[in-house]
Image 1 (tube, rainbow, N blue to C red):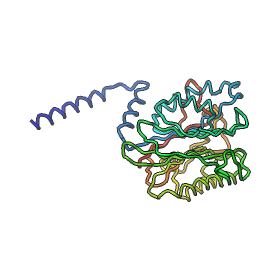
Image 2 (image 1 turned 90 degrees about the vertical axis):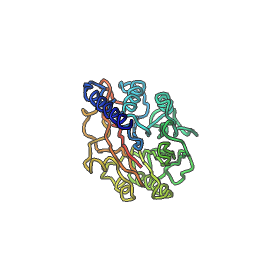
Image 3 (image 1 turned 120 degrees about the vertical axis):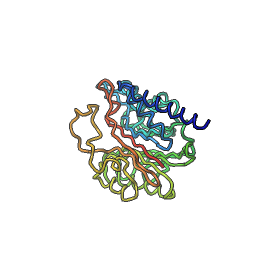
Image 4 (image 1 turned 30 degrees about the vertical axis):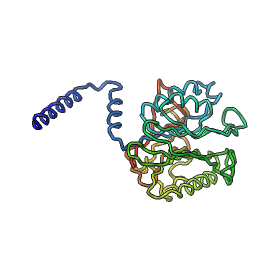
Amino acid sequence: MQTCQNTSSRRNFIKKAGMMAAIPVIPGAMDTMEKFAYEKDRNTHRIISANIRVALPDDDAAGNGWNVRKDICAQIIRKKNPDIICCQEVLKVQDQDMRNSFPGFGVFGFEGPEMDAFPEGYHGIAKNIIMYSKKRYEFISSGCYWLSETPLIAGSKSWDTARARHCNWMRLRDKNANREFRIINTHLDHVAQVAREKQVRMIMDESKQYREDFPQLFTGDFNSDAKNEVIKGMKAGGWTDTYAAIHGDVDPGPAVHGFKGPDSKPGRNGRIDFIFSKGPVKPLASEIIKDSVNGKYPSDHYFIYADVSF
């Protein structure tokens, strides 16, 4: 009886394999196959870091407003099938739109208090939200502190930073492996180098309270390329650039493209959006997301993703 069952199983496997091989490669089919291959590995986590650009009236006038981009943004992110989404430059309307676009995700990072002196644009305090699959992860805890000499005072600024900057973090439990880990999301100052160095040092020092065997992921817009002392300091502090771990130290080019994609002129910075890891985290894959929909880009930044295992 056992022999018959094994023979039948082999025949079914060969039949299914032949059917898969016969499937024609049509538009969209490869995406489905990639998704299937990705979902097979229950120990792989896909993280996307996305500077979605704040909702600006000036962008509306130029045809790149958030109302035009929000569905494109959600479509491109959803296509990559992420487990965790870390966004920067999120205003209140964008936070709500992202929640509506990903109803199966929990969201942290926009909860008050509100300190914004202005209701819109760059004068407001854009937030750095963290979104996670509620099906895959259990929420454990979360927190926020401000990147200044008074981290408990919301909206506080130090070190000549042009704007108030903050850090959000979340602790999750992977239901598949029953293992906890931590995800950190931030956006460093865009003007002052000393502020960027102080801000990232603050986050690194805070992260040291966790054991070396506790997995941590650190995403964000660092406003610094790989040659900057900010990134060099992170690597010296034991953090791994997941993209460089896969592709080496060759810079893939500017991250900021001004909604023009490959037609943009080379900027002053190379890649400034990063996904770092620390502890027992193995980078498996990482790519810059350069997708568009009908010539429209979801942001003036390219997004980035990384696949990791613990």
